[in-house]
Length: 341
Picture (cartoon, rainbow, N blue to C red):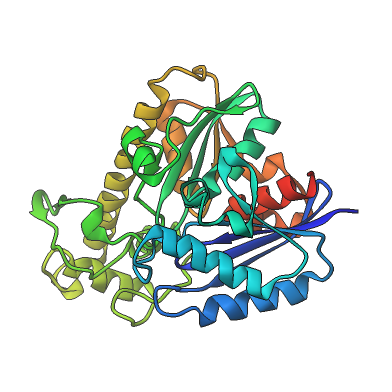
């Protein structure tokens, strides 16, 4: 039986999924802040490779090449590919989206196919398993929106630049996005107040205060490096508007958190309308949702008056890894694509 590992290497997290034939068996997610050093990535790869056991093939995708530790994306792709090649054995491939499976030696000549192509793997599996849909994956930092129909990925862009322009990539994430990047002004106690351009709080604080956060989705330290409690999140959110948590009642901070959550879903809604305006999928096509931000995407589906299909419902898997697959759609998709080669 074909056993394959799909690897999704981000700037902040490493995700991997093990598949056998057409079934996902296990998923890993580890904190690997490569902008600090590569040691966390290297040790995580070693651990996963050991726990996975015998594997016929490895397929790698990445977004970590955009980390500012690298002087260019080209350097990032080449260095990440080199690290993986040094630590893994057997058949190792890089995923290049429409360019398919590439050898490690192709990293330099196919940089722009390989860079940030993880969304394409998830969309490809979605296109194979549902007639039509708008696939949306909201992770900790970004949101991908990709229409699929007739077994094909209908994306207009491939590079980050082109996808930003097309609305298919939105730099809004469920936990790590700084609040200063979500709204410039927010309603608070009956009036509008500007938001400070300071890294005082993140969307993890917002999700925690409004009761939407599963702590497994917030693996990095808080903006101030202190406690990740509701009280700590209120304190950080209050600083965004030049106040302390003691300056207003708890309910006021909850409403402020809702204001930031609303601003974020509006940004993703605008992107979805831009993508849907190409009229390549019908009004009946559902949203296939993945990522930590599924609660946000369900709100979006209601606004768009569309049904919702969870990405993990398209995948044959052990019941105990279903939630993990939702959080690691690209790695899971890659493992299935590799196992089916």
